[in-house]
Length: 121
Image (cartoon, rainbow, N blue to C red; front, side, top):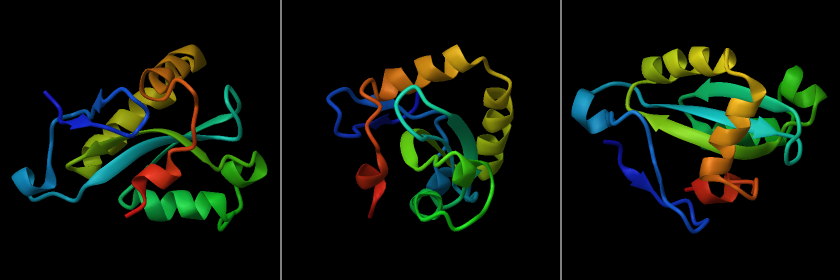
């Protein structure tokens, strides 16, 4: 089972899958969803540096989808001990129906709070 992550919203969630960099010697990765507002446009991405990547979204560093739709609010994430696992999971989520992604977000973050402050080191 994955490790329990308390993101300060009152209900801890289990991070999946249960891989840890110290266990496998791999490069860690993150799968995340950003939006422009609650129930708004959803963007799913993968990164090896969640804090830095979300900062880039918030500061519109790169032109593209998230910049065009102002997707700057981090509403969901999972950590992976190996970024290749995060990439594999992203490929699955990219094919998910919107309602399934919303359900996933609301299990972790029912109020659609911006989680950026909770991940900053």
